[in-house]
Length: 333
Image: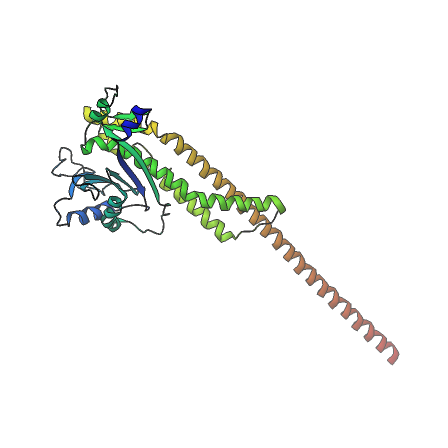
């Protein structure tokens, strides 16, 4: 017990936030580059572009998917915070405090996209602890691998503080945060759908508006498209360049962290839940359609009854007029 408590004292914190549906990282890069403060350093962009820290691989220019930079921490005299910003909406801060993450929003807000076709996820904040490998060994750690997940303390162990070392961890943490954000986003809709279903099970009455149902169904389809159907939770394109030993080792670390965070299992669970919600909403839509059809049938029956009534009335009046005219003619003769 003392050993684990002692190790906690040397842990550092990595924070993951999801506060927007998507970022235009090119816009964020311009905002960062326009700052006169030389303490902000661009560490990496992906797709790779020639930068002071990474120019070994250049691809055809397309919208940025990942942007990393460093900035002085607001808590601690010599602290440096490394930020990773993902196009899908996740923001990772290594060695960051909540104040550091809030301060970075000055730049990230410039690239936040407000497309009405996107569903803004519920704000989500996750925190994990990490330490470098030297600290791990000095505190009695026995695993020789440089970068890995210490499952005993649920801690990330990094070989060094290099930006490339943090990339595989950042990808997995970002995916974990995106799953949690998507789950939190669908939760209010799930409660509402359950309430509608409960109302039907109690007295068979539909207590919802078809417009509301249609809107919620479309929102869940967008969440499914942006998470399950998109590339956010797939193996990052970054690791397609795993032709070098360095890239292959980074991919192995990413796979280990992904397994530890149970990304695939949670992704499957999220997908199953979305499909169940879609099925329930389809059932409610069909019930509403059936109820509307029955209502229209009764309206049609009522209108036919009214028409028959007036037709019979008109027929009876014609018969009376004909009979009266016949009697009048007979008396005249």
